[in-house]
Length: 266
Ligand code: FES
Image (tube, rainbow, N blue to C red; front, top):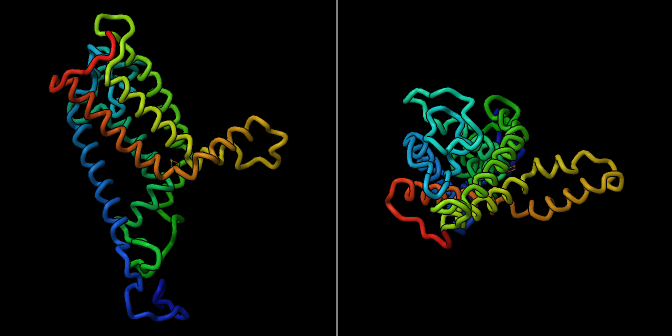
C-alpha cells in the first residue's frame, strides 16, 4: 500500500508543490553552510598543528581541552591524562566527537539537515520524496535522542572555554595583557554560552519536570531565563558556528606566524 502523500485518502495533487516562492533557498544555503563547516573542521582536525599561540596564550576551541601527551607544551590547561596519540589519530578527535555530537543531535540542526540533505521535507507544503516515515524511533535516528547527554558534556566544554578565555588575558611580557585575540575569544565564549544555555534540553532540565514552580523558586528563575533566550536558539546555533570558525582561523593564523596579534595592552 502506498504511504506518505501518495497514501489512500490523501488528496492526489499532480503538482509537486503549489508554492511559487523560492522555498529551496533556505535548505540550499543552510546545506552549504553545514557542508562548509564539516569540511573546515575536518581539515583543521587532521592538520594537528597551529592550535596554540604560546606568546599570547590563545588556544583554539576546536582543540580545547587538549588532554594528551601529544599536545604542544603549554596548551594542556588541565594536564595530560591521555597518552600520546598515534600520528594517524588527530588529537582533536575526542573534542570534535562531543562538539559535533552536541550539534548533530540539536533540535535546530536536525531540522536544518533533515531539510537540506534528506529533503524530509525540504520545506513546508513540499512533500518529501520518501513514501514512509518512521520518525526517530528506529536505528540510526533513535540515537539522536541522546541529545541531553551531549548537553551535559557540552556544558563542561563551555566552562573549559571560559577558563581558556581567562588565560588569554596574558601579557606578551608576562602579567596581564589583552589582544584582539582575547576579544575574539570572549565573543566566541559569549556566543557558545548563549547557544548552550538556550538549548531545549537545558530548558527541560531547569523546569520541565516540575509540578509546582512556587516550590522551586530558584529553578523557576533559571527556567524563565532559558525560556527567554530559547526562542532565538536557532540564531545562536548559526552565530556560534561562525564564531568558532573565525576564532579558530584567527588563532591558527597567529600560531602559524601568518599574522601578528594586535595588542590592546601589554
Ligand atoms: Fe539545540 Fe539543544 S536543542 S543544542
